[in-house]
Length: 473
Image (cartoon, rainbow, N blue to C red):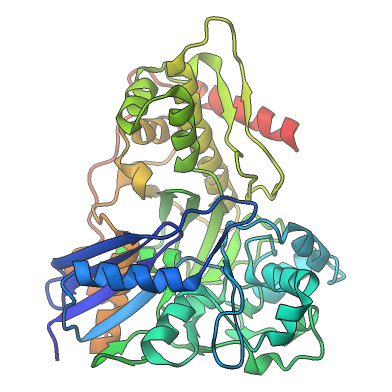
C-alpha cells in the first residue's frame, strides 16, 4: 500500500492536484494548470481541456505513485456523451445561464411549482442545474439530442477517464435536479418531463457510496469523487453549526446537517454531502470577479485595489453596489446587472472599491440569512477561497456579519477534501476521522471588527443593499 494519496480539484478556472502523506496528511506535492476562461451567459469548456490540465498539474506534482486518488469537480455542469463515450459538444458549466428559460419551463411542469420541486429533489431548478441544461439541449440542439447516450457531471467525466466506467456520488448527484438527497434515488419522473421516450436508467451514471471505489488507475484505487463544495466540507473537517462562506469567483454559503432540507423558496439547495449526511447550500454567481472587474475599471492591480478598499470608510461613505454583474443565481435573476447608488461629485476611488467589497459581502450574507431559515443553531462562519486571503474582504465580513468569523487554515479545501476521500476509501475509514487525524479542522481566532463599528452601522449598510436588491427585481 502506497503511503501517499492524491486529490484533484477540477474547478471552473483550473485543475489543481494535491498529494498528501496517508498517515500525517502532510502535503508532499502540488500542481496547477489553467482552464480556458469563460464568461456567462454562455459558459462552456471542452472537457479535453480539463484532462490536459490534470496531466500538466500531475506532472508538476511529481507524477507520484499513490495508493488512492479522488476527483472533486465543479458542480452541475452537463457533459453529453454519445454511444462511444465521445463528448458530443462543449460542456455547459454551472454558471452558464442560457438554460434560464428552461428552468422556468420546468417549474411549470409540476402542479405545485417550486414546492413540488423542492419536495421531489430537495431543490428548485435554476439555470445552473443539470436538468435545466438537459432541457436546453433538447430544445436547442435536436441533432445532438439524438446522439445523446450518457449524461455525466464534470467530476464524473474525469473519473471515467481514470477508470473507464461511468459513476458518480451522492453529493454531486444531488445537484443535478433529478436525484433526491432525501430518498437517495434518481427521480425518473422529473427526467421524463424532458423526454418520456428515453430510458433514462441507461443514461445516468451509477451512484456510488462514500467509501465505494470507482475503479483502478495506474494501480491506485479511485474514489467515487464528489462535487467541489462537498469535497471542501471534507477538507475543512466541517462540523454541524459551522457555516462555510466561500469567497471565490462565485460565492457559496453552506453547512452540514443530519437531515435533508427542502426550501420551496428555492434559495437553499437541499444537497447531500460526500459522506452520509446533507449539505444545504446557497450559491451566488458574483464574488471576487466583481472586485477584479472594479480593479480593472480603477486601473489598479490586486494590491492596489486592496489598498483602496481598506482606505475606504466603513459603509463606503454611503456608496452602495448591488454586485449582480453577470446575472445572479440567489436571488434567481439570470438577466440582472450591477447597480451603483449613492454617488456624489466628491465620490472617491476608495469609496468605489469599498462599495464593491461590501456589495459582494452583503450578497453572501443574504445567503446566510436564507440558510438560517432551513438550519437552526449556526454559530460561526469559516471563510475560505481566494477572498479569504484579502484583508478587505475579511474586515468587511467581520464588520457586517453577526456571527464570529474565522479563516480556514486549509489553503486548498477542495483538493484537501479529495485527498481525505481518497484516504478514507483506501483505508475504509470515516472521512471525518481522517480529517481530524490530519488536523484539517483547525482555524485561527475570530476576526475583529473595525473600531467603533456598531450593529446600527451594519443595519444601515445591509438596508441600503436590500433597497437596491428590491429595486432591481
